[in-house]
Length: 489
Image (tube, rainbow, N blue to C red; front, side):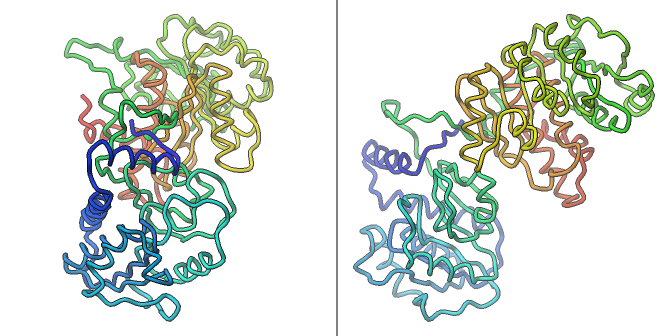
């Protein structure tokens, strides 16, 4: 998995890579620019669009100049906007790129420039190395860039955004951010959603030196990582090999949550799914998911199941005694969601009874009740990490770039998903997927990672035709397609 480094670490890693490979910094800049242009061409932007490229004096501006040159070579009409005061301010690599293109393109000073209403603005003003407070002159330039009414694509970072910390800031409001090699933590933070837009991470071939002393406990989960996380089955596998799962949940008026968890577990590949529910509600599941079994009354013997999830639509009234029995009777990791998390928040003394490596899947509100309040994303993910370590649990904090915090201190940030998945029941679908992978015999860590990625990918696939009309059932319907997309048999 791709490590997530701080802005300062990225600079050190770049320097290490250049020293190790004897590559010049200029050639690395050219490689980054080429990767951006390759991506840009794949987007099929009309060549009738006017491209504005706004550049600063540092290496981010050098990237922008190289990008401008390569785009012009590909037939795009460009206007170069300089945001620096003097040629003497340019870094050495930026000066090389400025000299290469300055005689071939129209150059405008930002102070006297008016944007047309259409086109694309490429923001290459400030990069990842921001320290201290933004100068007033930088704020004025950022305000100028934000006057543009078309699509803004930021190179590496939206200008003005700090890579590793929360600050109330003035930054470019990008439609897309195209960053290189290492995703920066701020680009994954919902606090910065209005600035980052869609995130694109381009591989430019920088590898970490095995002897490097730089380390990270944060990782970015991408499509290429999934194959090694999955178990393989053979032609003699039967439904027992694919796992027997028990899902405890549902209550009057909330049976839809149990339905979604149950059906998603089956669509994920669980061999057998049993629902433990209130007797009066059994016909809802039996009528809507004929592949599932139902049980009620006394709790079943847990030894007959390979995995157990609890919470979707369960309610909290008169549930605590059953909940406590489940925790104390279970010998294998559990999946806890929704009302199970609310019960745990009401009685945190029960946390110690959770089997090690149990998987908790709170949304932001449930997280706040269970783990504690936070003022920003950076505080929140630290709380999540500490909670996972201190309780030997896996905590899946749901949201854009869902964060999986592991008991050993690692945190995995998911890359799949779409904002169209912000719909009722999406979390219940995820619960069913996690318990299905657990039931198939996946290690808890891999069950969480595979479920989170497939869940996001199914949402992406469904959103292509549903957009804002996407509902949780649409995610379930697209789970099988995720296996096809990833070539998982």
